[in-house]
Structures are given as C-alpha cells and as structure tokens.
Image: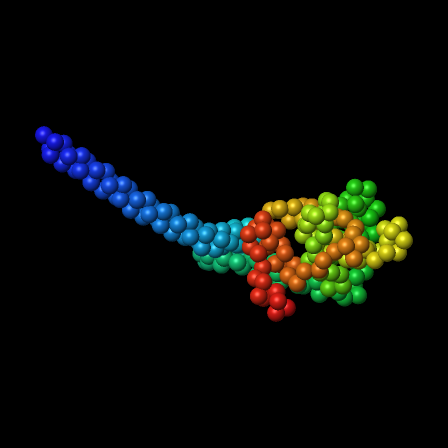
Amino acid sequence: MKNEKNAKKRAQHIKKIRLEREKAVFMQVGAKIRAYLFTGILVTAPVAITFYMAYKFIYWIDGIVGKMMPPQVREYFIMYDIPMIPGLGLIVLIAALILVGMFAAGFLGKFFMRLGEWIVYKLPVISSVYSLLKQVFETFFSNKTQSFNKVVMLEYPRKGIWILGFVSSDTKGEVKQYFGGEEMLNIFIPTTPNPTSGFLIFVPKKDTVELNMTVEEGLKFVISCGIAEPDAEKLKKK
C-alpha cells in the first residue's frame, strides 16, 4: 500500500513538474510572439501612417484643384476617359505658387501686394488676423528671418529643475530696456507631446546652457516624451 501511495505521489509530482515546464515554455513562446508583434507594429506603423497621411493630403489637394479646373478641361478628361493622375493637383498647386511668387517679386506684383495689404489693414478684425498669420509665415518661410536657431536648457520653474527650450531670437526693444540692457534671450518652452503649444519666456543668456543637438533633434526629443534621445556620439562630433 505504501509503495502504491509513494508511486502515486511521485507520478503526481512528475505530472506537476511537467505541467509547470509546459506552462513556462508556452509563456516564453507567448512572450516572444508578443515581442515580435510589438516590433512589427513599431516598424510598420510609422511608415504606414506617413504614407496614409501623404495619400490623404495629395487626394485632398487633387480634389480642390480638380474643382478649380475649367469645365472644358474636366469635360475633356471625362470625354476621352482619361484618369486623373494622383499628385497632379499637387504639382499644379506648386507650379501656381511658384508663378504667384515670381509675380509678387516683380515691380507690378509688389504694387498690387501693397495695395491689397493697404485694403486689408483698413478692415477691423481681418487686419489683426492677417497681420498675425503674415508674421507666422514670415518666421517659418522667409530667408530674412530665423525661427528657432538653438536648443538650450534652463532651470524652470525653480532651481534644480531643468527644462528644454528653443531660442527664437535675442530680446530687443522695450523688453530689453526693461531689464536694463542685459543680454536676454526669447525662449519658447514647448509642451509634450504637442510642441505647437507652449509659452514664451525671457531669460538672461548667462542662465542658459546651450546644447549641441539640432532644433529637429530637440523637437523629436520633446514629441517622444524623452524617448527619442539624440545620439551622444554624433553630438560629440558636432
């Protein structure tokens, strides 16, 4: 009887060990499959989303330009069953913007630009919106002005806590006079993960630490919540 009981216990013990090993194997296989799945998502998702957004943007531009085309041209395409080439609207839009830029750079174009701005500035609400939009676009697209040119660190909102900021320009005019002519910087502090919102602060240049990373690398760092950290070796070479 004792031998039978001992044999049953050993059999149960062996079965238990076997089940635990099988469970461990299945857990390892499941963990690997889950890791492969997440890796696949990490690799394909950015590419897929980028191409999808590009496709949607091109499709949207094609739709707008298609509606602006003369009826005779649209009828010609329909009559001869000519399909619209994807991206044709975007090419037409870029060509139109280049032509507008060439016209605006000329003497006659500058005259009409000044005339149009004079009319717009006479309108109460529209003048404020136009002025703001013009400054924003000039900041990002004009060769005469600079947008963010440096990435710095500074202690904010108190000593011992450091934050990443982007230098837009040196502080000038009335604001600089208020600080007694001290060398100050206009620094934009972005929010994470949406760097398009944030706030502007004026900081003495001596209280900032300039970083070697580029503005693009700094923006990636902010958007990724600190995950996409710039390569230290590349920064040393700079």
